[in-house]
Image 1: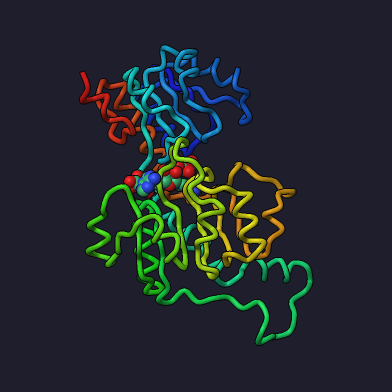
Image 2: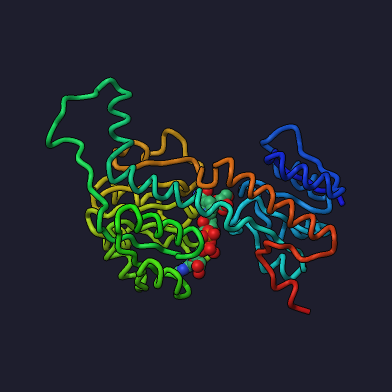
Length: 326
Ligand SMILES: NC(=O)c1ccc[n+]([C@@H]2O[C@H](COP(=O)([O-])OP(=O)(O)OC[C@H]3O[C@@H](n4cnc5c(N)ncnc54)[C@H](O)[C@@H]3O)[C@@H](O)[C@H]2O)c1
Ligand SMILES: O=C(O)[C@H](O)CO
């Protein structure tokens, strides 16, 4: 079987695919046009898909009817029409667990960075304005004993809650589709409504998996209801927040600050007004960017495609229904 990989991935994944006898093609440049991408998908059996810029929607499936499997190089699959893939019995693989620690580390880093105003102070130093020791200037806030609200307490949310509890003895509240008994037992996490999560959190960290149809849940009305010392962290997907309204809430100091590893739209560039604010820290979607996580992702993506080529079920499948439905 022929595998199209749209971007280089860690060697371990390439070796595994080659050792399994799969033929691999990786283009020699990164910025593929949609036409190029579709052309490559049409001439291959399976895709190892890196990044979220190309959408696997109905148009895609109509244009590439012979695709047998898609292995995403991500845990998030909001860029795939899962229902359509399932209807067509096409397995879609993702990369859970191996990036949970790395991604929650970034949420934790952003939380501290915003609480202690790291970006603001770093900008000051870079601009040659170290300043005298000042008892009243550039003061942060401490996180000890504060309330961390987790929206979407799954794999990454759990890791964020765990390290925040261990480091700062934070009180954990969460809102999730289902109750998370492990978090309730191990971390004394308390299930609350979305409204309570918004109004009670000192730090509100987004870790849910995104579905475009649910809309920008974190908008002016939500920011209005948040505490004035609240820190908003989003490492999940930018589509969860309305960025203009977040900007306004931050500029008007309705909330303390925001730490974003994902933006809306994404990417943003240096003329984006949110970057002018001193109470914001923005990172360019680097949640899983560690050697360990990226190797783990390459391994799982390769395992997913090797399984399909052997006529087996994908071990990490985002639409396992295809295996149970007749
Ligand atoms: N910044 C990055 O680089 C990076 C890296 C990895 C993952 N992510 C994002 O993080 C997301 C979470 O990953 P995970 O492995 O923890 O997923 P997960 O499936 O283990 O956890 C997500 C949880 O969110 C809950 N949820 C979803 N929508 C909800 C809603 N509207 N209301 C309440 N609960 C809701 C689900 O029930 C689930 O428990 C991914 O889907 C991806 O978008 C980002
Ligand atoms: O979902 C993920 O794994 C990351 O956001 C990379 O897209």
